[in-house]
Length: 120
Image (cartoon, rainbow, N blue to C red):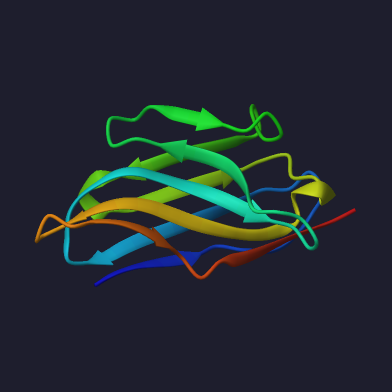
């Protein structure tokens, strides 16, 4: 019904930058919150940043000041600009969306994940 397609992961040196994108498609009437989470090997999935349809944002302390989340509501797309990357940012990054479908069903949708690797 609703899919999230992530892109932009890869390998980067410490101090470098990457930009992740996540586009939602399918039977979408509206999307409230969109966000990014990450999961490092052997660790639990954790919040990175979220953004509401109105543009309110929230960041984890670990990324505050280095990462910026934004969205294009017309394109149902959320972005994560990651600057000043550190080796501890290495993880699978997952997109998440709180979706209202065209039949007024509420869904929480996850993307497949995109790997970000930061070398020291």
